[in-house]
Length: 176
Image 1 (tube, helix red, strand yellow):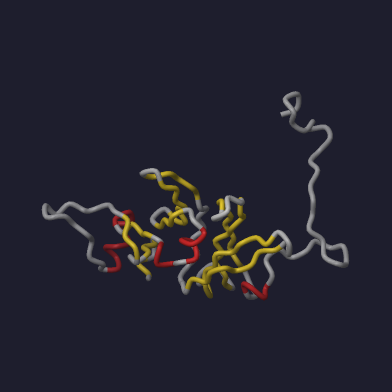
Image 2 (image 1 turned 180 degrees about the vertical axis):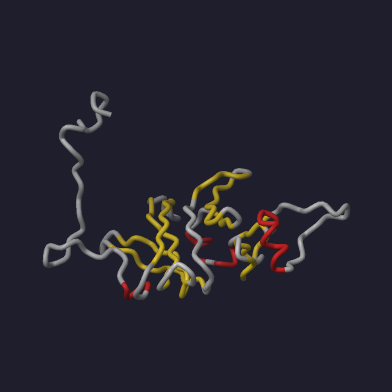
């Protein structure tokens, strides 16, 4: 805020652009890492093992909105001024536009990559698809459509819990 140490709005915003050798804006998501075509990018930040803040993205790489070639976790390389894939997840279903958010549960930080998919907010966990936990009961209608068995307790009540390796349920149905 202006007056409290912030920038005066009349001055504008001092932006820095990453430029290529010709002076044009530099691609920050090179095709060499993610392939050609449409990619859906969702960014997040976390501190690495040495306490440095890192910019990451969950990327659904594909040629359209229906199906993806694969998903990636991308890390921004400050030196190269572009994102590089650090993990490739072999997922080919729809990308479902969802913004990751961070939440603290039982003294641990998580990224919720989708409403029913979470992973510890740690770089090592983001690299490992098996570390993600998925809630099966959060999309009961999709579960019923795909014929998947719902986890229930001895009284028949649905167990709302997070499980590693569970199928990811979308509004279209369940996928691995």
